Image (cartoon, rainbow, N blue to C red; front, side, top):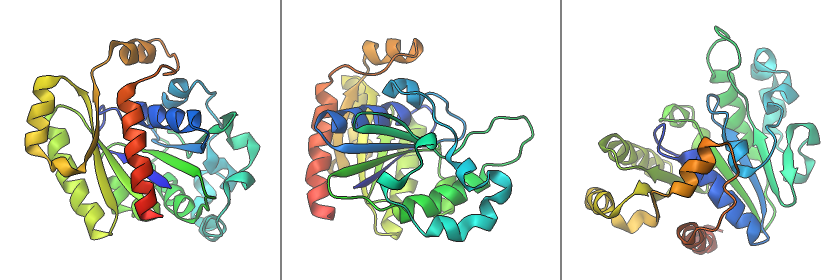
Length: 246
């Protein structure tokens, strides 16, 4: 199952991606987390893994990516991914598409080309889980990166901007026949109620309250390796969805 985690910057996409990946791994699933955010350097610390080498260099880096699209379209299976571009511990792995590293190096367009083709053509075996931490906003929808998704999972935080963006992303996803679900993140009782009144509650598969442990671990660059009942419930729901989409 391929789960693409999306929404606005700061909503908690990387945090939720890491928490879900670690919970699936605890359940014995083979998990690959793909860091598709060219500007966020933090998800590897959430997972307790090293930051891997940018996968775009396997195809020659930015300057050669557009000329190598046919190679990318050929597809891969997870066991054939090159080790030097993977950070892995047991059954939990991390692959990073690419990062902006230099002032004036140009846009992230080549990285979106790579992620769109690679994520669509990547073959998963039964019981394998792919979790993609998308870059903030909706540009990747404009570049059809979500063509490879089984599920689009939106992490909605308690802001009006997040609620409005969830409406637009849901529209995009429905236009390409992708299933959309919501996780409400960083909420308290009052803000949870407000968000429920503003979105399609049938799409909400979980709620993660504001949690000081998450905040402190993130601040200190520590892995999010503690148990959260809310995350377990979300994974339970995703397993049910998996049975429907498989």
